[in-house]
Length: 182
Ligand code: PAN
Ligand code: ZN
Image 1 (cartoon, protein in one colour):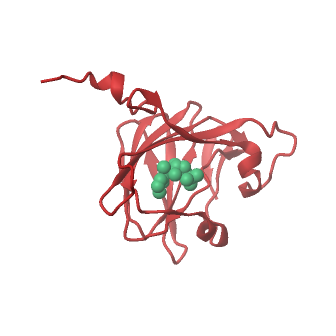
Image 2 (tube, rainbow, N blue to C red):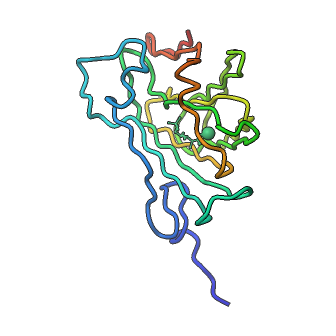
């Protein structure tokens, strides 16, 4: 029997699957600038806000396939507003998702289709179940990198347009060193 050394093959903390980093996307400030309340035109539009590593286990996505992801969010603010992900609801709203905190401190913003929103605190080892009927967005509220792992059905699909049409009614700011949700 062959024994596989797991860390060399899959390393969820560093986005490595089958021995290779699997970065899927890197969001720069210019990619998400307009989502901020006060786009900071003075800031470097090239600065990296977050990266997503993603792995789909099956060659062909089918019902029952699972995807795994790691989101790495840098401790950045844009005119006092904490760094957040674009946010989405799943195309197939019967598909839920698990999030789990790995490093740093943040918030998971959740919003139902009526626009009611709330937040769960994310910290290392915290586990969060996202019902498929909820839009979800991550916010890095700390001064360290926020790392959040995730697992979701590969056929879920990501609906960003819905969140653009129905923006989260909550924004998270750093004011006098405090986290303030408005
Ligand atoms: C996550 C997100 C990731 C980045 O893997 O895709 O945190 O957020 P946006 O996709 O909203 O930019 C997930 O929720 N997958 O379903
Ligand atoms: Zn999702």
